[in-house]
Length: 242
Length: 330
Picture 1 (cartoon, rainbow over the protein chains, first blue to last red):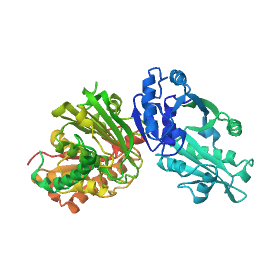
Picture 2: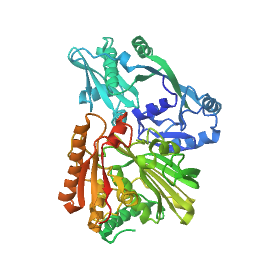
Picture 3: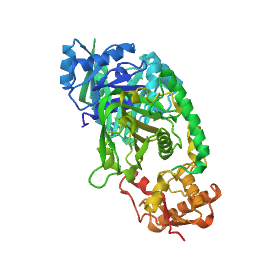
Picture 4: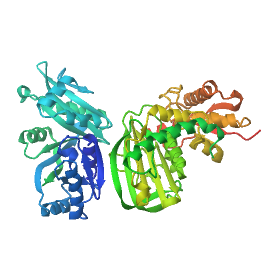
């Protein structure tokens, strides 16, 4: 469905670190406080399984991460089992197993009912409030501003009240949904579902063949929602941390 | 070979370089290669100095391969993005960097744009930085390679564009002292300065005019026309400034501006549109750049001489162009 090597690139393009640095076989993110996904080190050659990585290479990365005040943190994709074994042997533990779910945009796409969901760029102040309440602060919103190429936010409403927000960006023909947040009182009313479908329609209209989202394996509610919409697991990654 | 009249541009550049060098002086001795970039350029990927080998192109794709040379030494690389590049043209940025390289004692081994380099075949033969931090549009990029005798130093620079974002990838290879202080991210010039330098009277004749002299014809790839429209949008065109300077210095030479379109629509309407585009360029040269009207002719041939496929958007964009053809003396 998606060539493996395109996945890390699409993640980094739609949810970009402030800058990256190449340290040996790794790309190291300057996340600027934006969380693990933009800070973790990952293999420079995304198609590789990491079989060429030595403990010294890992030490060089963590030296740099420690100097920056970041924790030693690696992002390991499902096919990078050699890297995973090396990190495990060095005493790194697994964190946040995450699945990439995907469906063809055209199959998922459905225009939302009137005044329930809007595509808006840049996001409204009320969307920023919803994100802030959901723990998506200024640093993560800065990531959305950095993303290049086609992007939008989705603004969801229930009973004529602001209730949800999300961010979508496209890299090549892959659209990725990030930071979907629905306010507490508005949950379990189908808003997330219609926002995802509206987002897929936007993605289809902007040339994205696939609609994708990253969800941690233990987020049962989100996994259920996306499964019921027909998104299927494509690949996975986890962090290794010390 | 910088003509006398470049004094204005040269003095602007000197002041830019002094600014850049002042920044370098904070961190150590003067840099071996120090390129000043547009003000909004932000460094988004960096490869710190380390022993490595880099393949540098020394000529365009020749139908079978790209002539290259492998340079081994201490390598340093970086990618910059200019997020809202507006009408900042790839050619103008590349010309500015090329001039700075020359000023620092580098010899330019290759300076070419998209199809003249070899397009896709050229792109896939070389490392021009990694996605997604770097983006190379195979129909819209400029590649420069340069070398310097001292220290065996070499550099390769790619400028490209995607949407509103301008991308610059630069690699330098040399001995350790050469690369130690290379490219302070803060050594930047303002976009207006960079443009002023590029459109200053007597700007050294760059790519299109060299090609005009060598080959007798050259595309003016920095012009932009709105789709289906014949008027030039914006007025900041280094290629036209260079062409005007060339015609002023060679009052006996005449050129024909030839308009081309993509293959969408009928033949006659496209010929009319292409001619209108060529006339618009002629008008701009006469009215804005004081070129003698007797030295300029305009013609249009619609879609009859494509230089790329009309099956893709990139190809169609490449086909919508105005070329300049040099007529024989006399």
